[in-house]
Image 1: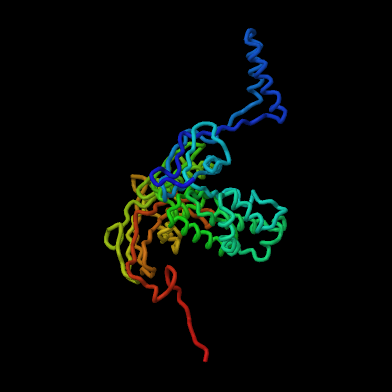
Image 2: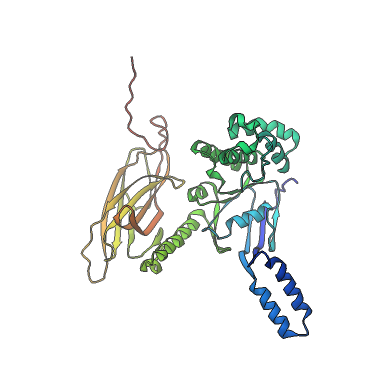
Length: 429
């Protein structure tokens, strides 16, 4: 059915999913019988109540999703993040039609390609090429379209002569690559991705990311779930945080990711019985302890954003507040690209100040570097840590995104990539 440009590509209304968990396999038989017997014994309420209680004791309910609602316009990309067990994959399976919701409804307008359990629908006795034909037909391609795209699918999967061998002879990686190739060549209106960008080796992952970029550039709607927060920032216009099957927060990716990391950090401290877990809060630029963080920050004299030419000097002024119980204070200073990839950084030992009557004090420091980067926008991240050693580092605060600089000069004639690396180049006679 062709997509209608005026309607949302995807509408999720008050979706809930509840699983029934049986105490034993035999409970699947006995529990319905006990409930039916209790209903028939209505005139004997004590006996009916006893039977109903026995039935309830053998049946438990797990609510995986509760009251989830959102809409996606055409060409929009939504990233869903959350800890394991928060309901992310269940939600994607419901949207893809693999599962039926217990409550609510999902309205999908257009062709859907779902990168969920890749390769699970392959017939092991058929060859890779035969499985491509079957899966492409299931996804709505005509025989003519399958023939036209077969060479592109085979080339993208890059599994060589194995394409004409039975799938049962494939490694798990080969099956994943072939399944991914089929899905991304169906020209979907809606693309659903669940941790599927980690297929294959590094070269194939780069090719997969580039293919996703191409699909989105054509106006495809994206619903993305993953623990790769940089991918969420790179691909998604907005993000949603799920926790225990409920939407906790929805908004811009940076804001939602910061809240997710904030909650993750509190969990990690609580798991280690660290008394500071209850003191972690949202602070300017991120989250952490208000008495163990950067309290003042500026670039080149106090601004939060500055434009530079390639190689110009960048001066960073920071003021760090420290509490007395930090034994080995350090500042981790990082430079990130526009997608959140860490490019470079330093661990800086902080001097312990002479603490006054207020119970904490501040340390000022200046960091200077040359902006030897390619044209683009870059961010500065700071983390205040207590680090007796590299493998015993406790993050006390993390602040990102409030300081940024832009290199406005195109330096591709000087070097390729994001920043130059010294090289010795000689020509042999």
